[in-house]
Image (cartoon, rainbow, N blue to C red):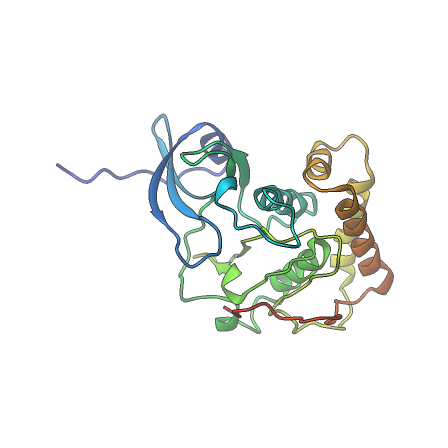
Length: 246
């Protein structure tokens, strides 16, 4: 039987495929703390790869409410889109073979390429990731959580432990610490704040429903602090790096 091949999927139809397609299990990603699966999402004649993280496979954590990690994955995607940065691959919440969870578009990338292998390159993209991580209070920005695709576009993944109301920023990307934020990026932060303060923005409305009230308040305060200081964050109290680093 000849091998079946599929044409590249246009990104404008990827949301419909990811939302409506059938999830077929391809294998388990074994190096994470929570159940994570590589799946194919099949809808009509289209097939795309995705990462599926079921809610019931989330390992209980003492500092994050049980069953909320998949919500935080979706919230991180929404925040990135609201900022106009599109750093996080398309991420939806839906049912799958192991129940409700997050389904994220898989990014084709070189698994040997990560932040430590291209440190010093792509400053504009990395600076947006730094600002994003501060706003979402990312407790786990490992080097391997920054992917580089075939077009040299960087993608940020794994955001299950974000948005806590207590300061928990842990990241390997401190190369811009204390430096001034460019006027371009400050303008993007101002626009993000404008959207967050709007009352009729559907993206922001959904984002707010995914977070606890205290988390929502603290996220807005972190954004305001970036605007007030005009500089990239510096390591704060506690351990500033995740473990393992990669």
